[in-house]
Image (cartoon, rainbow, N blue to C red; front, side):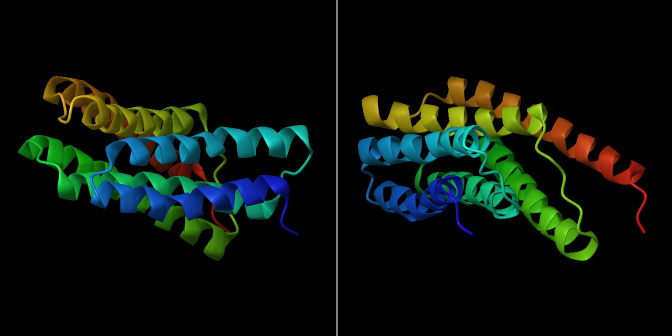
Length: 180
């Protein structure tokens, strides 16, 4: 059964190509607004699921897919259309690889071992960091028409640090798990 919370999550997936479309058109303000609306659905779907007792297995599966879909698509599109310094490019590619690894790894854990790793505060902080990074880039493009490399540098360092910590934590979690 699809709940209201799951429909909100699905709307995040549906808004992703709209964000990408506006990015490709260099319509920064529209991309920023729609990205923020899509990112806000991550908070709303979780709240609705808990408040209305609509927590479901489908919601648990869709939520990380929707997050990865929005964040990866937006980061990849921005990386392909704006000029960035080489190490910025490497950092964003690392973030994309981390997101892909978590998505594929999670799918394997669920399908092969029926094992689901609950989102942690660290994983939420990492997602929030990526949202702040993307919003900062989009906001800079909207207001100024360019990106401030110094701000992007700091945000990328924060995001890479959180991501390395998150990957290490997941690795430790999986190493300590006894597989049947």
